[in-house]
Image (cartoon, rainbow, N blue to C red; front, side, top):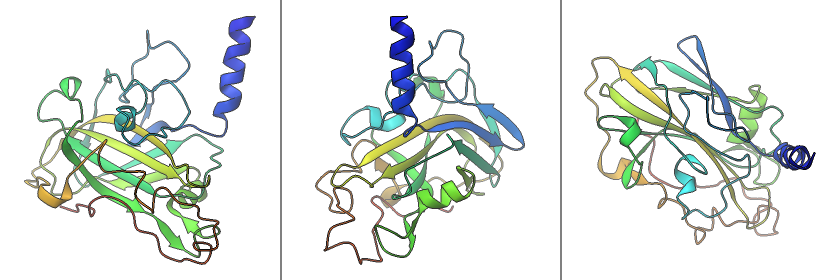
Length: 241
């Protein structure tokens, strides 16, 4: 009974939070890892994450691929230029904040890849799309409008190989208390592309975000921000290949 009560309390808290639960890749549905359930017997393309709760320390190792982040047992094969649809849990209540999709080349077996250092590049992003900071349409609001899904395209010229794809939203609805919701999945990209992101297109996670960034540590409801119609997405520009 005690364990049931704990599980119920965890689930109740999680209703307002969450992450990517499933993926559609090339018409094939891939189930994500299931938090709050033992990893024993689970097999997924998604790296392990143990809680629906957000990451609130941008210097934490959990911000890379979420809490635990243990390697995935499966890999999804996808052709460069193809679309990947990530389905977040529904309902999703946080509609103030950006959506950002990152990738990183594993340079070999992704089970041995930690994702540390300047290895991450963006393939899409959406911040404040229209309106003002507290009431406008954000990337996360667009995700909710899209049946809590986010569609990304693998850059057509991306060099074939093994990659992590990292979906993320940053919830800014609580004043000066940003919340990160990241999830990583393992891909094998095919094709004849030669593109390799480098230089200013790369960032480290953790590293790219800081609570000293006024666009991250922000009160969108303050008098100073309530009428603003622009917001700068942290990190490098999107790499399109």
